[in-house]
Image (cartoon, rainbow, N blue to C red; front, side):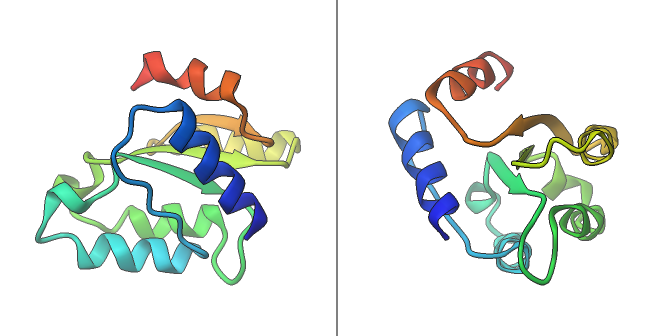
Amino acid sequence: MFDRLIASEVVKNHMPVNTIIALESAEEGLEYIFSSMDNPSAIPDIILLDIKMPKVDGFEFLERFEKFPPSVKVLSTIYMLSSSIDPYDINKALKSKYVHDFIEKPLTKEKIEKLLPKL
């Protein structure tokens, strides 16, 4: 929960965003996307996805995200965010066609600024 609050504050203070939706788990994120499918403007433009989460980890989120229709998947840019420096985790994240980059925690202003040109 603490990581989620810090990430929300860093994003709010350093990215040109109107709305931040900070969810507690990957399951909540998947449910949110599913419930928003009829309203594409509610689908998040950017998803900061942690690898380590309760119940459903970031990799399982990606497996479930794969099942959404293409019209939904193209609306979100996913960045994997983790304190893991395990090369296996990093490579697995970057091999996903949905993950645009891997960001090592902590999330900082400088890391956000590096993302801005990619958006």
